[in-house]
Image (cartoon, rainbow, N blue to C red; front, side, top):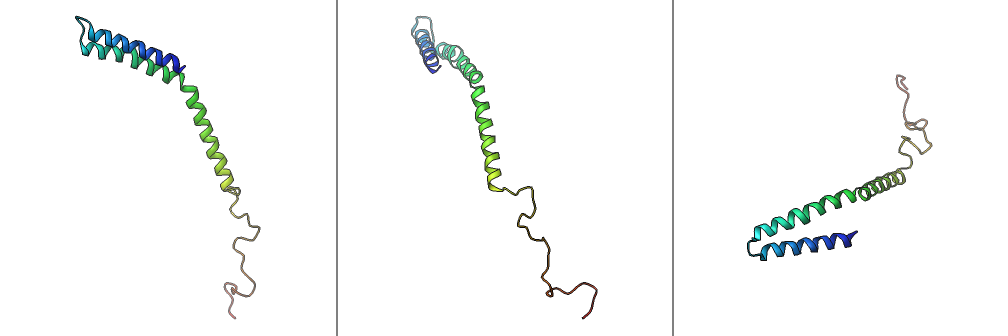
Length: 101
């Protein structure tokens, strides 16, 4: 695909040189010829043809983020995966509320 792109740019560059060196041609006309026949159409074609590759790259990046997130926090959905009571007090250390010794 890039061979066609390089060949088309070469052809439009030669068209621009011919425009600039012609008896009634101008350098501005050569620049306009190169931009309108070469750069703009090729930019549009490459953007359209590159859409599937951009979508694949986006999906791969999202999948990698999800995988990294899942590996970083395997117990993300569980608040306490340690197996202990979350607020359990040791016996005899904390006095019961409302009772006086």
